[in-house]
Image 1 (cartoon, rainbow, N blue to C red):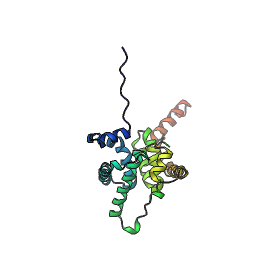
Image 2 (spheres, rainbow, N blue to C red):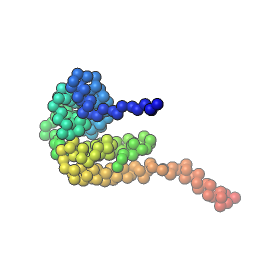
Image 3 (cartoon, helix red, strand yellow):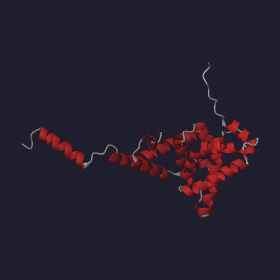
Image 4 (tube, rainbow, N blue to C red):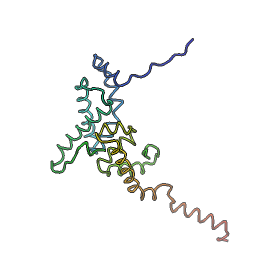
Length: 212
C-alpha cells in the first residue's frame, strides 16, 4: 500500500486564479499569508497600530478590487506591499502638513533581528525603538530584508530601487543600529550586577582567608 502524500500547497498565482473564477473565500489565504509582512511595513511608516490596521484593510480592499489587474511581472507580495505603502502615504498626507512630507519610493529602503532570537523583553523594546529611529529609507530596507527576509531582488522591486542601493542601505541601517544599541548591550547583556559582584568577591576573599 502506497503511503498517503499530501497535495502541494497552491502558489499565489493558483490562488488568485481560483478567486478570479469565483472562489472568493480563497482571498483569506492570501491575507493570512501576507498580514505580517504588510503590518511590519506599515509600522515602519506610520508607527501606530490602529492606523496600520486601517491601511491594511484599505490595502486588501484595493488588492481584491484590482486583482484581475495583477500581471504577475512581480510577486504578489511585492505588488501588495506597494499598495500598502501607497495607502500609508495617504495616511501621512492627511496627518502631516504638506511642507513636512518627503516620501518617495525612490528613497525607500531593510542581521537577523535579535528580537527573533532573544526572549529578553528589554532588548526587544530597545531594538524596536532603535529601528523606529532609523531614517525611513533605511528602516524599510531593514524590515523587508532582515525581519521579513525578502531577497535583495524582491526588496529592490518592492521599493523600486537598484539592488546595489538595497545592499548599501541595509549595511548603513545595521551600522546605525550597532551604534544605537551599543550602550544598551554593554549595560544589559550578561550584566554583572552588584549582588553578583558582591557574591564573587566574598567567595574569593573567603577562599583566600581574608576573613579569618
